[in-house]
Image (cartoon, rainbow, N blue to C red; front, side, top):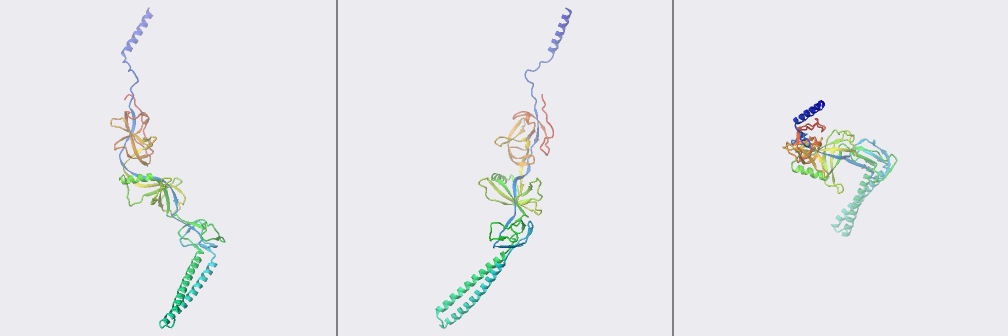
Length: 393
């Protein structure tokens, strides 16, 4: 009986202790507000640049072809060297051209003598006709003979000029300054007038051009920004251009836009811009591919939104989340115009003072009440502090 009494006392004490404790709430415990990191957006003036692929092309190119046929007697230049306009490049055997010039010169002298004789006869007959000493027909015949002699002389002079040009063309000269390439012929080779294959090619590469390609849609967008006053730039100042070489290194000297082709490709919807760069060190060579950054000016009242804070739908629509006035996550659609570093350049959809959520995205959805914590982002676009979710608050 004693043991039973002790067991009953223990059970009674446990029942009394349980009755004194508060009852547990029914259902799951209340969830705490999710901490999210945010930065405050402020409008700023953002440099507007455009990244375009490009290819270097010579400022001028001259393919050297002979104007007369002949045997190459001398190659007077160093392949790969610099030549000046009017420098001698090739000399052809000119013996036949000298002979032709001498014959043409003699024909001119003969024609001059014939013209002088015809002139004398005409003058004499014309004077005699005043006293009716000769018939009018004689005067007309002598005038006709004089005109024929003068025409023959003019033709002889033209032949002499042709012979002079042919003789001069036997010496082939550089038409422009530039770097000359490899000669396709050597001494003793036979060349023909206006042949298909060039003897050599001269290229001007200082300065040098870079052809850039852009879409017509981008051109219209930029013009719209300029017309609306959103994009500020000096109209009289051509846009500056910088280059990145194929090895990833920047080209030291900036250039300027020198030409915009006023036609859009019917197949690709693109148009060509041409930029000109100094190239005294001959770093840029024709045919080289580069990446160009075109400075278009500055976008006024734009916002820099970290790329980590922007999501895009299947249709390309950009969306961000901001903390509303009642501390709820609110989705906003934005308009982006290119990038600047690790940021999107945003021109629509946000306002000054918006609290942009940049961290804690896995903890909320649109309309969720959140606990905003001010965050900072380093130059690499990384949030420097770690945010945690606190329960029961």
